[in-house]
Image (cartoon, rainbow, N blue to C red; front, top):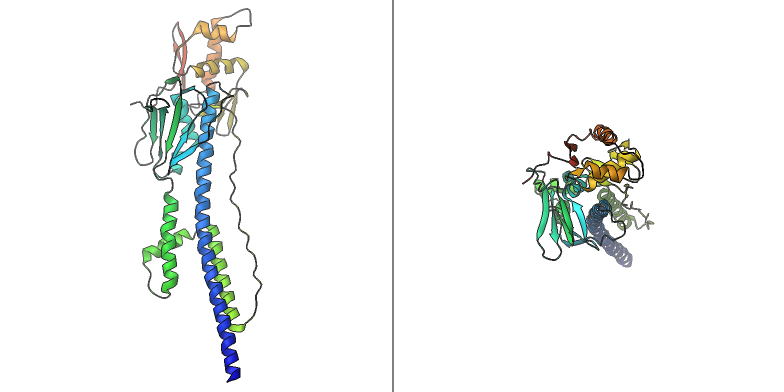
Length: 347
């Protein structure tokens, strides 16, 4: 009897210890799953925040403002971000649209997104557009420049956290299936759970939990102490790609300081005079600039000014801009030139 009692006590102690370890492992598993979900959510929010700040930064540079600050981007509600500026500024409608398209690709958001510009004082919407994945885009007021004023820009992503909500739905059925044991589980729930666990970090945690559970059973069965092996998780990091301080110009990025146009991986070099002509046309995008004004501002320090020189540089610029058929330098005979994108749909 004493021997049996001692053995029973030993076994019960091991069983209690094993149960406690199992509970701890399950807690660690669900905590790690929740942490991964929050990490993904925070990472996505930070990435979009940085891209929106980059849009504000480039708008100020295009407005020849390199001193005032872009204020911190605020998520005023889920999926809606507010971009504010320190001072009044002027911006071109097409530039805001092109910057948004290039930095916030609509294919990365389930339902696309909406951009609206608000007057700081009156609160009215002064400009906006919508990029959709399931219906035609709504693009308004192309070829215009907004007059100087106090503006805030609101970026709204309707399904910004859609993937995270799906992960939440998948975790609850999993916990129920662990309690049900051999009971039948809804096939749709199983499919959703499998989809969720295709993520590498969740798979690592799940495998680690199974390994620890097996270790617990061994401790209960044989009474052996096993040393836990720490598992290191990879940390996700935001890699901020260096983007030159450039203004959006149709499909191009116009690097004024570097005297070049960027189109994907292609770099198109500009001469000093070509760069000056294009910079003046871009600052008054969509507006006619008289020939005399262009010649005086570009050849102000030179003795002889000829109209043929201006025509020659415009001709060279047209060839270098030909990769974007929508972007045109239009000649109004006897008056001057203007840079425009006539192909963009307007309301």
